Image (tube, rainbow, N blue to C red; front, side):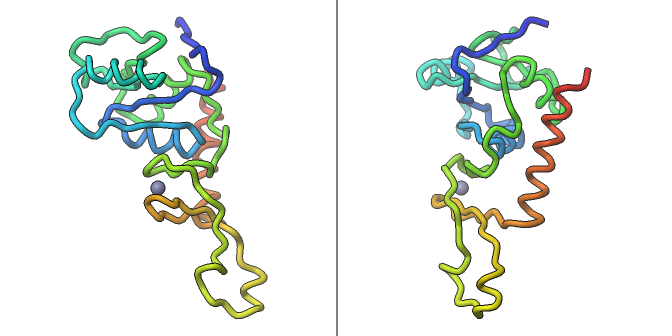
Length: 166
Ligand SMILES: [Zn+2]
């Protein structure tokens, strides 16, 4: 298989609306991913990708005019997350543990460290033991320290491991 390494070491990505799940995981890994929610034509998507220097990800069944992956577009053969993850890794130098918890999975905004003590008036003994989490200043989603973040990073680790299986 031919590999198209993007010129930039850290790829920026544009996802067609039908692969939002995959977009969320790319953001979880720390990548800048824009998802197009309006129904854009192939031409409009390509134009946006070139203008913003993003690599377009689109499923084979969602494009009428594009059939081959190149430096600007990756045509995904499968509708399943794990297959898409593998295929993206064949074309782009994605490190699934690049910068976990740096970007909101939902809206792509840079996350801020959250100290829950700023929000709640906790008793001193609990206060001192409260773990810090992350929050999105835009959509207000909170990424809780502990099990929730462990699960997320565990999933990213699985993606990373799957790239090294042949
Ligand atoms: Zn957000």
